[in-house]
Image (cartoon, rainbow, N blue to C red):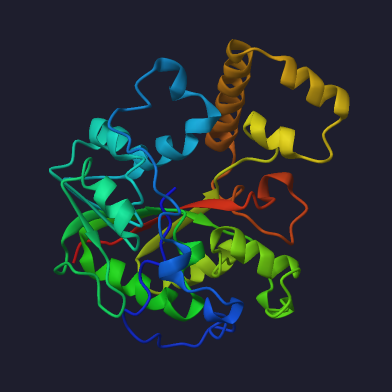
Length: 307
């Protein structure tokens, strides 16, 4: 997915975070080089939620979340990448204006084929839009890539360009990661290696996200993207604790069997989400409740009330 260090030099943060000095430079990354062509992909010119089975398939949960929460008519995708959700959003929301911004010029050129407008965001500037320009500002897999020192300013900018009554909708990498324990000079340090994999320099807990967004937006809801242990089959296969005989059984499935399993996993996961108490899916790494076990990804929705 298109991921950007999108909002780097917008405004000076008012409050210093305890990880504010943890930056890309800390681990030796130059963002423009690191992200160059990294997330270029084929744009989604079609609605991949149109097939009836994809209404339930667990692989498409992220797209279902976005299309159920985004409202139009004016929509901005921050860190748009190559526009992977464009087709689904157009079919569900029918926006009059769908805009994307990204750090990588190659992603922007691809996104232009599926968005009404796409811009390469220049570092050191505010978001290039007027106040209250969009009904929804959304992102997918972006905020874990924004340095801590710029997060509050980024959220303030999103609030500025969101129209009264509008929404901020995000899929955010989240978890408990103590960057203080990182040896930034050791290439074998596990946290440093983790950052170098995808660029996750700004991962934080759901509690931290709730506090940040709550300082700016009027209401914020957060819940686990995945309900433990309801995962796509690929995640089970990557689980080192999966019994070997079960792994062999899954690998022996043909495509139709795998699809059926994915559909049922998605149905059960969504049923759990619907029927669980409203606060039961809020991730908390200190809790022993399996529903609260952080999945590594959260869905966040913030509302900007009418003036």
